[in-house]
Each structure stands twice: as structure tokens, then as C-alpha cells.
Image (cartoon, rainbow, N blue to C red; front, side):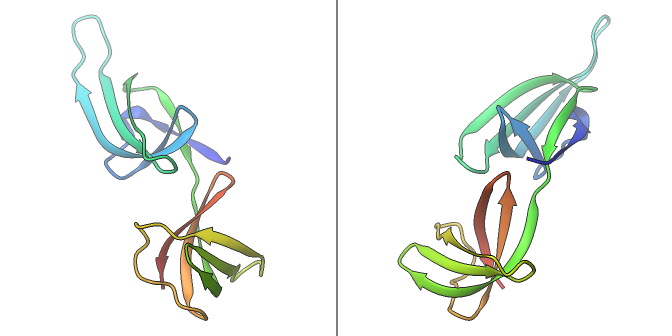
Amino acid sequence: METKQSRASGLKKGSYVLMDGEPSVVLENQFSRSGGRGAAKCKIIAVGMLTGRRREELHVSTDNLDVPIIGKMTAQVLSISEKVVNVMDMETYESFDLEMTEDVEGTPVEGGQVVYWQIADKKILKSTK
């Protein structure tokens, strides 16, 4: 998985971070001021993008954390069957199946286009175009 580095203090609500090896969305980043002998701390609360599991971590505000690089791509719908959508990537012409979940924005139709995200080695259907 491709990642880049970001300071703990620079993570905002809605940004992405790796927690326990899972790409996660930051829900909240609480700061505590430095005391007489310590550095400022960040309490990062995030939810996993793949499992939906909520996590909390405490870091020094100057710590560098891994941030996943998420590919947002377009594909054409070839066929739909129950909870699986067969699509073809618009750039590479690769065909593959995507699972249809409840959080997909819109309803895919055959011949239409969808947006999917590539996170690590997983592809997630996000919305229709």
C-alpha cells in the first residue's frame, strides 16, 4: 500500500490515517497543550474504512503518521447481479467485480458509470456518476 507521512497535529476531521495497519477516516483530533515538561499530545479518533471498527490512539503532536494514498477511479458498469456489480475500468480496461453495499450513493445501472476507490489491494464501490 502506498503511503505518505503527515504530522499528528495536521490530521483534520475527514482526513485519512493508517491505524493498526487499516486505512481509517479521522472523526476527531483532540489536542492537549504542552505542560511544563512535556510536549503537546493528540488524541486521534478514527473509524476503519474496510471494517468500520472505531479506534483511538494517543500521539505526540510532532509524530509522523502514515497516511494511505487512495486512488479514486471511474468504471463502466457491465452487468449487475444481486449484490455484485461487474465493471470495467475506464483507463486500464480491466474488468472486475465490486460488492454493492448500503453506503453506495445512487443506484448503478448497466452501461452507466460508477466511482470506486482503490485502498491497498481492495476496491470499494462508492457512488454512481
